Length: 82
Image 1: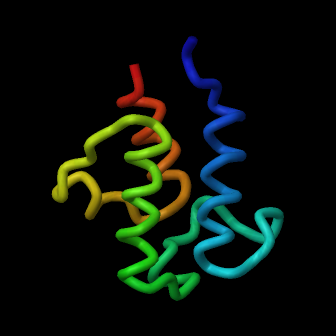
Image 2: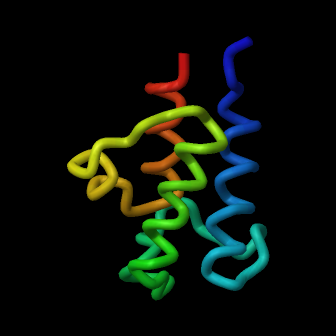
């Protein structure tokens, strides 16, 4: 069963918000997690690992570096989960 954009968006907004310590409703998915929300590099790495585990993906380092916002993560998951 294919993942819906709505499901992935909700899951990743909730996860990102938890990592940065805000409510999911306060999260703007277009804002840069590290630059605009102050997410630590450790939390950013942990979020990538969470995405890999949750969606059964292996995200290469060069691709992980391109995931700067929640929307970037959503698009990556939707393009790469079979």
